[in-house]
Image (tube, rainbow, N blue to C red; front, side, top):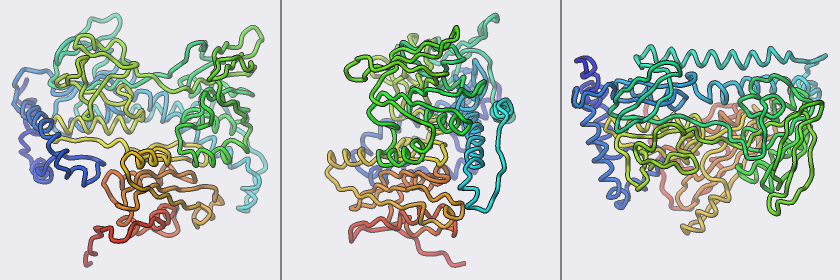
Length: 560
């Protein structure tokens, strides 16, 4: 390792810079925990149980700081250049770690190329189309629209161009910071060793003090479903918008299915949902799901079948339509056969973990997911931590969201830099970008009640309506609800769920409150600009009542 490289490695462990010294002072008190309740960290039992892990983290950081020791090619190698790998790489460079990232496909992974980014471009179009075609809404604002239409190819180009732009931005940001982007498929060949290469070229082998697996996921297609990419397809194909079918069946009513139903109905398609569970939107808070069905499903050209499996789907060919055989989810008896123009398979995603060489380090996947502990350290078949190996994002299955992968990657870099860090996944928000949007963080009401019953505490629920919000009424978008689930004995926020205009933006006040351990008796004093949609959350927190005598920690105002 060169002198320059060695110096860059020693910086984060030695904290020679002023920034590093400041970080040391701030964090010298113990484990840095993102989103864990303050009193949980103070519990003696937790301090004892975390002590050994913290010593191991500090020891690893000391190794990282030993200039040139071990002769590793890199301090950190990341396999997979999606959002999670990108976030980890940028933070690693910031910490002075010599970093490489291996990508076998294209930079940006699923989110940028086949997921979050292009789907939002399509949803931006669907939102505008829906508004322009809502004659009553337009007239209520005093607007007249004679006609509206769209150019399918131009819409598809918009989504593709956005993905290309963001992909380029990610690539350039890593190159500018000195991250080595290595092209090929990465395989772990032994302790702290990775081999990568492309078809037709010789493989190369590199060594790394630490390795992060960030290989993401691919669409999950159940057995019996034949995908041709034209009439039966996954979200990967749908985002290309090669056609807008007159009638499309969407198998699965989760985030992906719900968003695509918004796109297709806005562009003129009829939609039929096929859902295996007894209710639509099973992953959402039941009250929010019920309201969402009233707003997002019932008024639109959407029908649905619940409690059924699509046991077999045959693509359209020889002039015949797509055939979908439905069976009862419980009895497995045949229910009926649907004939539609197309079928979108939105049954979730599966981890992309094959071919990583996990057998070389005694790691066995669980349903394809790589087992990890709370610090994202990979666990082997015997339940032991594999030293210097981590897995983040969809590949570990803890929370299959792009921003969760990025947060996990940053958390791992914190650890290998000597600052123990545990990410609380209950503080990570999620959103569904329909019109109106749905967002959530923390527990649903049934989950909170189950937790309360097990641990012996009470919960309270308060709600506010968008119909009481001035900004929402000005936009003539009063349909919506915000819901807070909390503990009245402590003021702890257990969950927040929002359905309404810009819900995906509003949720972050709640998610940050959970992450920082802020209680309702504290946050209710926060000031919100008027008139803004943020006042929906303001009213929500003010409506919460904690038991008398519960302390709060509102700071005294600072004199100007």
